[in-house]
Image (cartoon, rainbow, N blue to C red; front, side, top):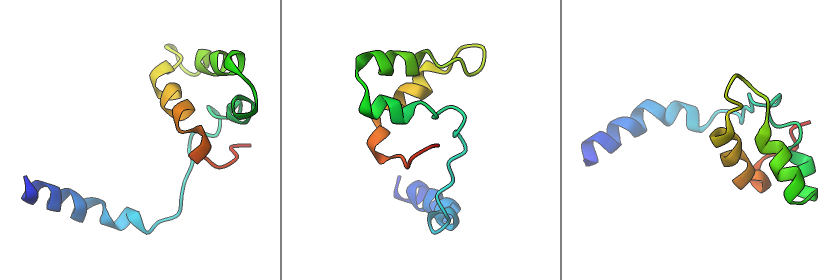
Length: 73
């Protein structure tokens, strides 16, 4: 188990010192409204409209971590 964890660390260690890249800006434009809004804004954010399924699980993880994200606009 420790060997596997060590291998994973070695593989991903180059990316740890890199810049923070937010590639979901198009998906997160309404996240600022959710931070200052209420439940209605959160439900509107989760309805998304990105892709055929709307990506509700992905958007839910962004919503839960919304205070950690920089201003997406």
